[in-house]
Length: 125
Image 1 (cartoon, rainbow, N blue to C red):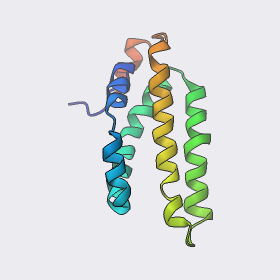
Image 2 (cartoon, one colour):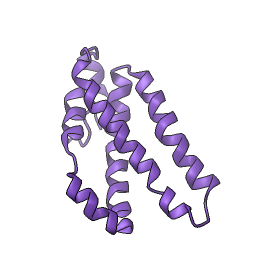
Image 3 (cartoon, rainbow, N blue to C red):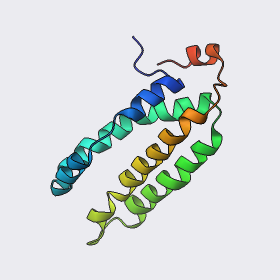
């Protein structure tokens, strides 16, 4: 059984799962629970996202992910690792990642299908 498939259809399927505004509003009152729920889901989704972008040769999107999500996360968790703003700033990388996924969801339908099927078959986990 393959857990992750690195193709555009799987990525689109993952990106169509969205939280409603009322759920996000409810989770805003339970910040620790929201952090404990969203962080593992993001970590589970990252191999699908990175693998699909790599196979589709969307290196600009990978660079945008690194600059828009990873660099602020590293800065927040390792540079600003204490103080009264740290708890609030923990959610900035999650918000940036959700916005990144939203932008990606809007652009995927405009992509041409360029990946070779044998490349996708070789990278299944």
